[in-house]
Image (tube, helix red, strand yellow):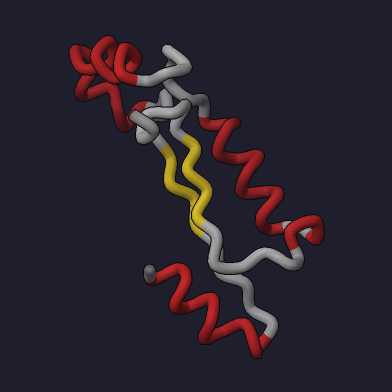
Length: 84
């Protein structure tokens, strides 16, 4: 709701507000929980963890001109983890 509220407040000033909600992404920060990776993958419909590039490409799109009419959006990039 913060994303949507800020999008409404700042839109008149030409400022766009969007969010990205990532799932489990293969990064060093998750190394502490390697024993949990198999469970996360099993519960993810795409049966894999995401790559940093999956998030980076969304960020580049949202920061660019092709998304100039987007504001108040939340992109869930999680391989379907939150679907079930």
